[in-house]
Length: 116
Image (cartoon, rainbow, N blue to C red; front, side, top):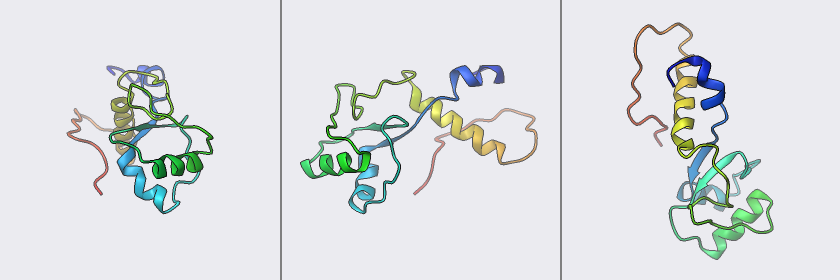
């Protein structure tokens, strides 16, 4: 993105994402509430057990869930091939907006994200 005028068309509709291994403990504890496979990308990074598959069906209110060849749960069509990277940019922009003042300079984000 070279200009803020490109934000709406190129960045704004990038969805959040997670890897399946990050969701498993939340599923086990019944903590995923209101999640939807249409507003979050779930990358399947490991084999899914039958138990996990059933937990996913309950959590997302679906009768059937599958992993497609592209490794995304439930065949979600990406808005962009690099949608996860664009969402990370969206996160950085949101974090920078919390500063509350204009930034004069260049921002370089090295491995942006949450530390758990």
